[in-house]
Amino acid sequence: METEEQNRIRFQVELEFVQCLANPNYIHFLAQRGYLKEQPFINYLKYLQYWREPEYARYLKYPMCLHFLELLQHEAFRRECVSAQVCKFMDDQAILLWQHYTRRRTRTLQPPDAPAPPAPPAPPQQGQPRQQS
Image 1 (cartoon, rainbow, N blue to C red):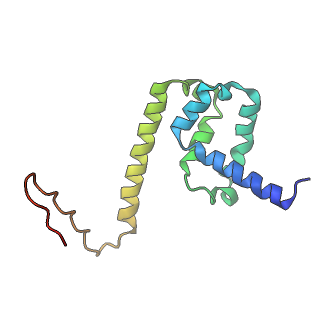
Image 2 (cartoon, rainbow, N blue to C red):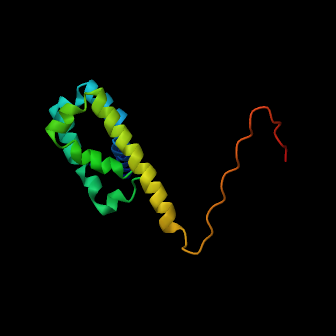
């Protein structure tokens, strides 16, 4: 029987680990070290599926980790994660998704009649002294 303190620590450790799965480079690291081939680790990944439940998912800062957690349930995906090219592709796709999501969220949250944000100042040209404020 775990104490309340032990439950809290286990929750924090599992939360941190699940969120690490949002990083394709970390998944690649796990694959290179052979963890994704070990049955106890695969069982642990299955156990962590409870993070998909809304009562737990609300604590996640990086919801993309749930997508990777789902993909890690498949042996073919786990096998491919050893490849540096696959890791690079996943990383590039994650960055593109975050960029698109951020721009789209900004537009969604901005009221329709709000003025457009001001353009950033132009960088000084070479040879021109900078103006000080």
